[in-house]
Image (tube, rainbow, N blue to C red; front, side, top):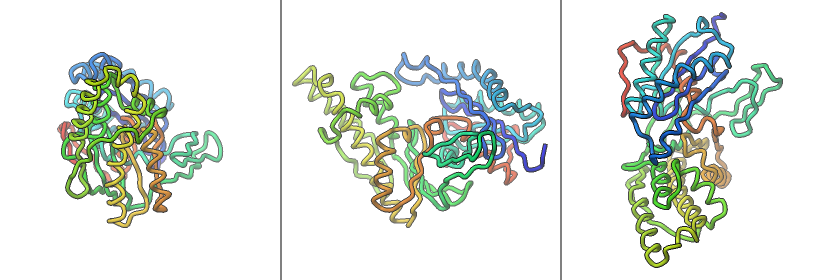
Length: 359
């Protein structure tokens, strides 16, 4: 193995997706994820069931990733895992496996913050793949001659998921400054709760996005929270939506069925306006022209579209990750671990996962 070849085996198990990625430096050779369908019948993730499925999936997923990457265990330079935040039972499965693998291979162990990893997904290079969203261009299939369009430091990232909503200023690959966050519920929770109220299956966010395509985004209105500085609040918006549905169903039992597309479009439009309002203020306040989004909700088509509009209006550069790097995946854990490896930021076998892990 050449001295400049760093092979990272990364594990992500923070919630209900079991994922393993193999990276050669900052290039992803394989990114395999096993999804858990069992939670759909419960309308949300059941922690105990999630941890059990991680135990069943982790070995096959790692084997599949190694095979796809055509990498041997003897080539691995370090093993990385998600330390948190996430579900404790799920985190423990990934952490335990990673520790055992690192100890068996006698290679360094690297812990990764899940939210930092979502942000650094923008720096992933992908083997032999072109992506207009990521800005990756390979001159010849099978080569590693890449030009990657990445944000310049410092840049801002709006990190949006089922558990987090944050505005982060990124000074370097490993230096993050939290500028604002939700004081209660995350925007992903606001999407999923509204979907449940109107009878859509879990996960509800993608369903709202799909139905909204045929709706009028200005048909209905909802409350706008008043929160200090750059923070967010989505609890009141959820309550406003609940009362809106209840009041209209009282007068018309078929209200939801007759207006489902307009309801979804209006609600989605309102959430995105709230998100981008603070994001725009933050960019102007800090005089930053490179803006990015990350996290599961960054897959939302309307958010992606409206962020581009915002960028064009202010002549800002906008960075949107490919769909496969929006949701939880091990490639983002791997890219973060790669930069930590370069800094020799390793951890011991006594490292403990944290359900709550500050940025």
